[in-house]
Length: 258
Image (tube, rainbow, N blue to C red; front, side, top):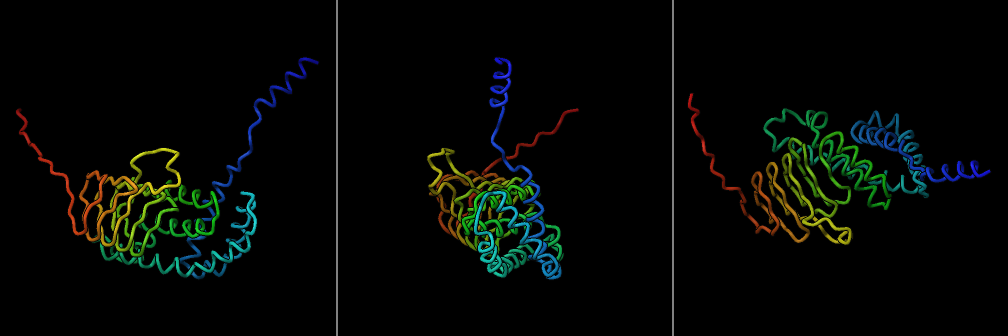
């Protein structure tokens, strides 16, 4: 009897709460299909019912209600999201000398793909759908190397070049015609749970360029319009409009003796 009781006690001790980890795969498939629907009208007409079905199934597994109404609201934003992404693609074509065509940007640019997933996940977040937006953004992060929190506010004509090692935090505000390069971090100056509901990340005004590996930290930090932030700069204070910020570094070159 005691042995049986011990076995039952041991079993209870190793019981864990169940999490639908298979949702990671489901959300990846859903996100890919959603993007195909967004840019390919033939794909949309053939698959929209299946995309809706996948969405409703994900919400069901997340124990969320009102799925049909949420899907209807999301569909209503589809054209607006597409228009914004077309402006993002045009910004990439306009600013990247390596771009040979708009088609190349849509089909081959990881930065554009990361922005596309962001704009979709951001819309879901605006509909107060939990978890799903973050799962979508983490899929994009693993695919492109760019981590854009769906809570960030990003304006029109946004261009990410190279799209590797980029972090854009939850309360970041990026206005219009902004360009950022690889390795840029728009983050919080302190990581404390007590700051969860405060603005922790910077604001980037219109027409700013942020070059590779620059780090901008702090919710009170504003990068003024038309500014250029050079490579490897670390900023924790606001920068006035029309500024150029760079790191002064001397390269000392010595000839090797043979």
